[in-house]
Image (cartoon, rainbow, N blue to C red; front, side):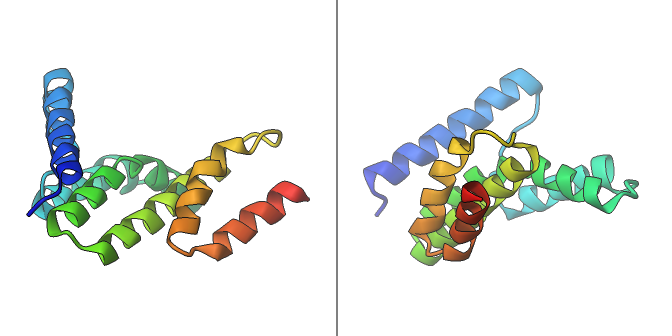
Length: 137
């Protein structure tokens, strides 16, 4: 039996897919693994296949994957699997911190606070120490 919060998340997820379809004429984020894999293949072919610079290729891939967090949470909630939920929190906080570290200015690191809370929630203390060391020095 799904909780009210899970049902609300799934409803909002479906509404986001519909809104993206109205605006862009394609459904996003994906609804299942088959759609997820298809989109990953299309993204790779369109944006990354011919890129020769490995640093730029990594930066592009990280920024293009920013929205998969919603899909990760959908799968965890649908399966009611706390290990998957922990993995989703871990991966999304890491991905957000990586992306923000690539684009952040050297003055204000408050942007990382909520992602560091996500890292704390899933015991990812190495990344917390890394960011705190970088901020404090």
